[in-house]
Length: 188
Image (cartoon, rainbow, N blue to C red; front, side):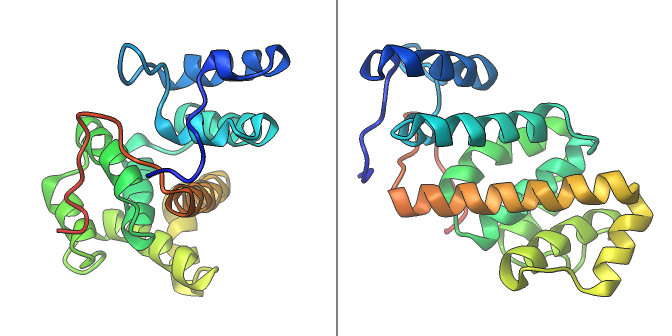
């Protein structure tokens, strides 16, 4: 059970309703009567925080320089490292949609990544693992990432991993529940 109430538009003061509208517009509807995911409905207990988190997430999901495959490998790797069933349930299907292979998804889910993965996929899983667990990248990992995606991509990747680590931590701490119809096999 969530530790904070899920906020709907009508629960917010009029001054915060535009924040809700912006987040709902960029996140789409999960269920007809739930215009946005529970993650943001919980974060809306602090509308300014939800607005800031939403704006950064919007950039990282929709406007970053990262290839969608790289982005989703990093996101599901963060979900694995933080044991976030919620993020896994939301992003594992997206990873499949953008072309992340079943082999890569399964290696990440079972915490075997980057072992046995193609180097170009494994390095992004390794970067997420190191950043979440160690708070930095080993020189070898940094050099490999920079070689593959350049300075802008490297910065975007590091910020993406940090963002999803923060979000997963917040969602775990707040006890956010998955929306109806979603499930996760992350911790099976």
